[in-house]
Length: 152
Image (cartoon, rainbow, N blue to C red; front, top):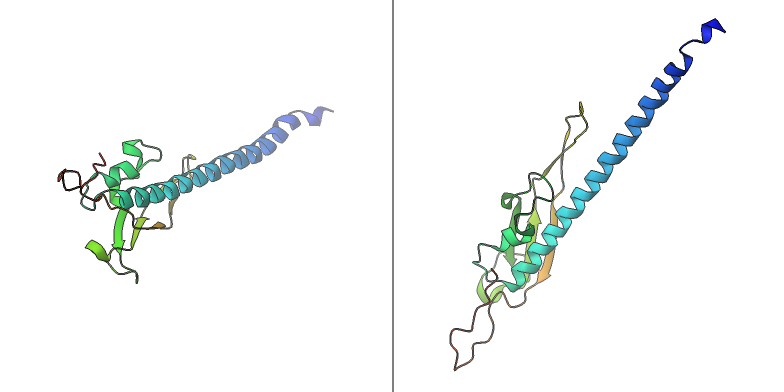
């Protein structure tokens, strides 16, 4: 019996370390899934806002990224690009615009677990939507200033 001293402490150390490794792994996978969900939603929002706002509106990217709410760290308007495309997927302007594409690229996910300083480069998240008003609506003859939608 005297050789059994400290056995429970050793067992707890072994089982506890495995338990905490699994716990932190589950937390990190959950954070990664949340981050990917936010990136997907931001690309979808950007495409949706871009099809109804004027092409030269500078606030589209800010509105698409949740009006500056910092839902995930390091996500900026530099990660978001909006393209206006023709029916063949080439860049287009004016009445030739058929599709709007919003891409979130070059986002890096950082782990929070101490000692695990890995960085994961996220894939590019893209969303395509067909053009809608692009911020312009039919101008009535008696109201010439009513032709543009203000998306601010």
